Length: 338
Image (tube, rainbow, N blue to C red; front, side, top):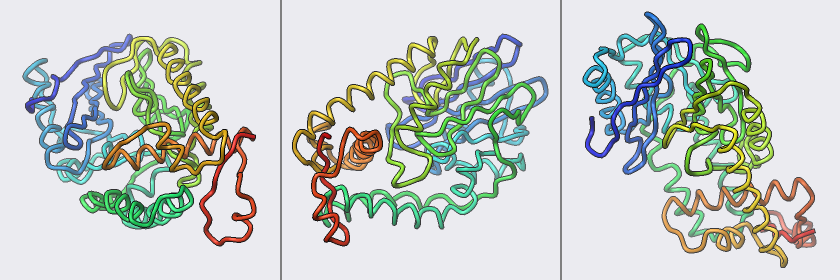
């Protein structure tokens, strides 16, 4: 295995299928989980890491680790089917590397399909929407420029890759693999259920609360969608183990869902406290996260935007500078507790 990565793990479903979990270094010091499902003679790859060379190397090392630790030889040429859980580059970016070694069909939910198949167009459109959000959030022009440079910085490493079929709610792309659509973290985010094991992707993680961004940037994201999706997976009966797109296995899925929901409720309460006086999203973000730097600034302001947007949708926040909204073409919106 690549230095610094934990070893490949093997999991068994109640009906005898094998799932191998392979950590890959998607970005420096940022680890994603890739899974291989073995069902008789069938080999299914779930996610494929990022487009970074280190990610591709650790994916290859993970496959070698399966043979070294468990005595089963699997190569990318053996893959019969590729399932992508959602359209974030740390999960789909390795597709060109994978597809160079297998002609296995690729599936992703329809709401994320164009991110893979028309990637260059998607980056341009998403960047425009993000720019508008950052301006209305109250960031200075210099701050916006710096964040946008970071946003587009490594996105040129991926190139559009065809998608062969759509993962649809309640369908089975392979025998015994059920698709559960859980929008919020990403529009086309899906979990994959294999009997008593749930591949939870980035919907539920063992330690952190998955990143949220407002629906004003991308439809079918936002905290409201995420809460609905959390409730959906919490109701699943018979899930013994959940395996996330990052971090460690989850042995009590309903408990972990409850913890994530409670963390967001606390953050919502804090936003309301901060908005006792009118504040922009940028000002609220500083109150929530304090002094942060680099790409974390963008993540924090998106997370803040998702929570402010949710409270505005529920009527708990209102715009406190209505006259400016009426008279200015692109005003900074200031929110205040209703």
